[in-house]
Length: 273
Image (cartoon, rainbow, N blue to C red):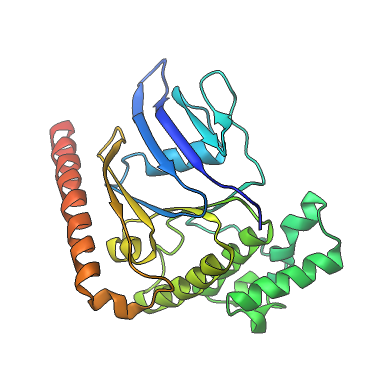
């Protein structure tokens, strides 16, 4: 795996359409994410969580502030943002190529980067699929497998590139509760094995507290950090933790913070109508 992955977000701001509507999505947002941390970000819908993820990924520039990866400047108003293979994104809507088999999808990154031969990339892909419990569908096409399997395959594809940072934008949002628990299990096994830095967006508070090393609760738009929860639950984790007093206390604290911001967002929406 790649070494490093510490993210520093310093007073980051983002204004969409600065010469028109001037929508302030991020407002002097700061956070420090250590190498190998599993960071989860929660907050009201539309508060700016995905804007922050896209800025870290290098998909758009900041209007103010800076973002660093291992001390290297990634983005600022004077530095155009650029995506990089050290940061891989898994989107909520999925992005597997339908004309490729599952293993070909997973092997695509290392082959496109020129880091592995086709044979080596296939071996790596099959190993990654095995880690995600998908060995039996390696030769299937995305349209032939379930949505839960596709999500796990996308994570395997991202990990095949050995990124420093794995960025996940509500990857399990569309899954039913049972399928989601299976996806969590395999994601946690991969994380415990490889320890990439993870930046994970979700609206599911149970998911947030169960997966995270640290939870950032964001304010309503414009996004800033309202609260940071340090999750010290032991790893490896399983679902028996959900009944523990420690888990219940953390979830309640997270829910209270999110609810305050959700009420603010709702009230603001009512005034704008």
